[in-house]
Every structure is written in C-alpha cells, then in structure tokens.
Length: 214
Ligand code: SIN
Ligand code: FE2
Image 1: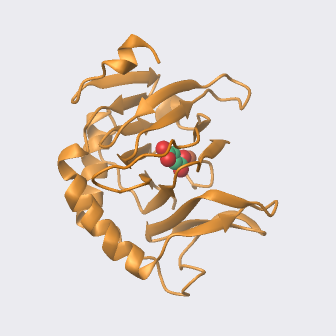
Image 2: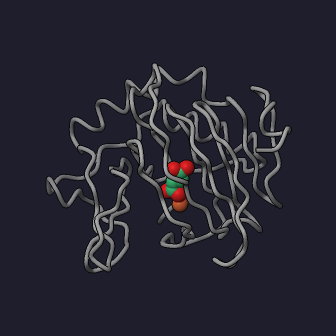
C-alpha cells in the first residue's frame, strides 16, 4: 500500500485513471439509509451464489434491484427483467440508492446519470471477484458507480486489456469508485476479502454497482 492510499482522507477525490476516481467516504453519511433499503430488497430478492457459464459457483453472492438485474448461469451473462429464483420482477431501485448514485456520478464529472440497475454483491470472508469488464450493457456512455460498504477490500483496477497489471486500491466502507468515458471498459475486480467484522454489515463487504444497462 502506498502512503497516498494509507492516508486517504474522507472527502478526497483520488484519480485512478482518465475518467476514473475514488470518492473517499462519499457514501459514509448514507450508510444507515442504504443498509435499511438493502434489507427490503433482500427480503424480496435474497442473495444467492450464481453459476458462471463454465459451471463454477461464484464466491460472491448477488442480487439486484432495478428495471433489470444482472444474472449469470449456464447460458451466459445477461440482464433479465425478473429474478430467476422467484419469477418476480426485481425490486425497484430505492430513492436512497438512486440519490447516492446520482450525486456520486455528478461529483465524478458524470452529471445526468440515470441508472436502471443496481447489482448488489455480498462478499463473505474469502470471497473475491476475478478481473472482468462490465460490458453487458447496451451503451457505454454512462459510467459505473460502485459503492463499498462494510469490511474493507482491495479493489483491482486495471487497463483495457486483461493482461494490464491492475492497481491495488484499498477501499473502505463509504468509498465510491466511479469509472466512465475512456475508462468505461477498464478491467476490474476484488481480491479475496479478509475476515473481520464491521458495525454496518457484520462479517461481510457489500458493494452496490449502479449501471445503465438498457
Ligand atoms: C463489480 O465489479 O461488480 C463489483 C466490484 C466491487 O465489489 O467493488
Ligand atoms: Fe464489475
């Protein structure tokens, strides 16, 4: 970890790449509101481990809210209008989520962000997310807004090629990463989450990823 990362300040905007920043502590004041809204979502659409197209069970647990939800199964990755577990439409994006996502996008230079989906990831200790691009969306003009809550993690932020060596950025509860424009298709992932406990989430890390999919 560099000194810069170690002494990151709440309120600081840290550049990651052209079109990509971390807004330190941006979501911290909204934590309780976000966690309360999350509870209603997971009552209707519980967290589950999805399967990769190759048949591997993902270590991270996922659910969604929005007009569509991101899913993965043996037939591939895609956005679906209803939850395959319940057959019901995904819960709507709650106002607290939308407000936070729009303010974070604007603070990062992407005014007018209108997300139609929020993928929600839960990382128990040891869970990780391999390097990938968010590229199942229909148009790449909108940025990605990614909110970290709970246990800290190492966010991996690479380049346009999977082989580009990713930067390792420690993200803590309340940090928001935003990437768009020339960074919209940057490879990114999450290193295995280290065991611990956090007052907001217990033994887990929650990530809210807002996107415009349609
Ligand atoms: C994602 O890429 O979907 C999640 C990233 C994160 O958990 O920080
Ligand atoms: Fe992603």
